[in-house]
Length: 365
Image (cartoon, rainbow, N blue to C red; front, side, top):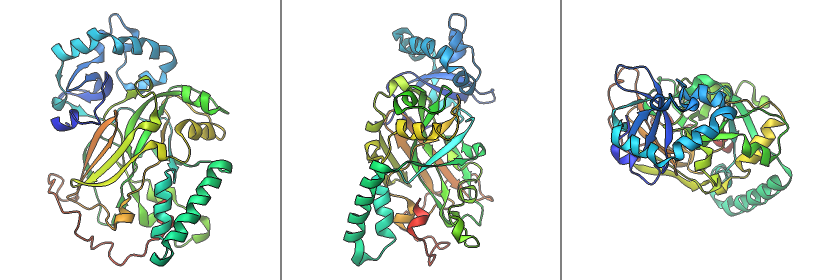
């Protein structure tokens, strides 16, 4: 359940969106959500074929057939009115990840300020101005002649948008990365950016939690990044709370992203800082693998990683990740032995597990 203040925040969707959720003791189903209330999608099943799905995953897999009907349904004023009059409070629902991806991809190093921040953090303080200027020039060249850097990751990482994440004792450098998740609703390869834009069914909030100390393999330094170890932990990719159809997001580059740790703002930027736009990322991806309905691309994260702040996640932390119009997700980090405790800890306290650890700019990928 989400706190009521997050339903009324600047990040809350303005239109009717979808959730995979359930009342206590009931099976999860698709719900239509408007503001602070929700009704099961099946309420409209008799007249609307698009409303006859038990999961958003199933609906997205048949997106090309049903998206027009869903748009008409969600755009009707009487739909929002029915939710307001007959719906249950969203706070009474148990929210699940809005869908289970078919394939899951993550774009690395795609926000300009974050790339510059990592370069400066990895050098000497006296060289900061030179490093910043050199990285800015490298980004210009990359934007002109380069391509996105995208990895494939495990769909078992997907976690709930409002719940606990158990931190095992050996996970001592878990870092945050708030992102826009683009959900694919069509199938294709070799797409232009314009064609790729048309393949997007909708968007969700993502937090691509990454174990920084496991990005590089000390036993195999020449082989580069190990995405399995650093991005493979179960539950390390909270997704949701909402699936927001693409027609409600006319300009994804205008979306704002924020992440706070125990109430302290750590990341705060807009998607127009991306090196490569979401359609450009998907176009590149489609040249190397076929996109399918239900695929999810995590599109990169802005500056302000824990590596920059000198702070990684530990039991007792509460992480809030938000994207304009896509909503807010909340993750409570807990110790295996005390799952029920959500005690708040101050951001300013050093993490004893990571004090003295040498981290480089490569760990900020």
